[in-house]
Length: 369
Ligand SMILES: *Cc1c(COP(=O)(O)O)cnc(C)c1O
Image 1 (cartoon, rainbow, N blue to C red):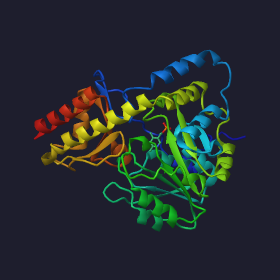
Image 2: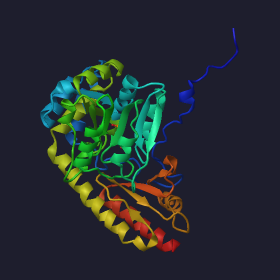
Image 3: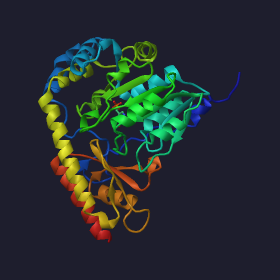
Image 4: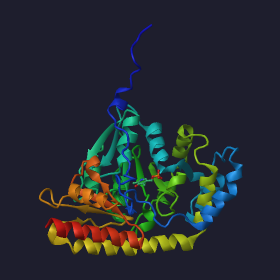
């Protein structure tokens, strides 16, 4: 017998819990929540109807294989459904990949300004995170390849990237794939693929032919179904078989599967979200550029948000701007939690929300100057 307390594994002790985007502005009514890259127009009405239609089935477990959803995804994207796996958000898939392919002593690479979940997925399995420097908030393919060692198991790379919004052109992605040993998995996280215009390698065809490429996608962003937690991935069959061993058996809810299938059929809604997001993103980037002599810089974005870099000190800092916005009920993502204290990430909202945040940024800059 011992009175000792249970002890965490040392690699869990080295982690901290995920810090989500703020949902409340203390004591002030929320005017615009622009902190989590959600689609502000919400899901397709067809997806809402599809969820309502299955609510009375709530006593039955969901289809464990997400069969109809995988078939619908396969038809839409020209992918064999056998190469598709669904997850409780793509977050679950990112975690499954680490559980199946890495552990203590293994290295997992992500870039300096990468998605916060990658470090958590790495540490949770006891693997060692290897962080590769960026060039001006953009992944550097040469540096990523140079970081590969015999201990490397996985590389997590988001394209477009979050929280920076930056995009690697197709040639860079192909150069990365071509330079990797085939036993190193490249996880191409394409959560924002639908917002990209022009030159883009979505990886969906390659992930069916190469032995070591996994592409992850989500219904949380353009489809406006973040609350339902639906992600999917395309991968080689041997990797699908490994992921199927570690995934939760009933990991996608019945409402989630139904909503996703319906949303895939509503092109008009998705096209509206895409075109409005891109239009407002470019408009907001222009507004921020017009404040340029205050030292603000909008990093060019291919996603549904903009990363804004502020001067390091003086009256106009990201921290002071974040406080100002919160006082006015506008919630953005201040990235000090990610060791980026000079930056604020602003999700694209509706026209009203986007104009509101632009006006508030201008008021802040003019008031501080
Ligand atoms: C939002 C996001 C996801 C999606 O997460 P879900 O679990 O599907 O909601 C994945 N990767 C990146 C880079 C993201 O920004």
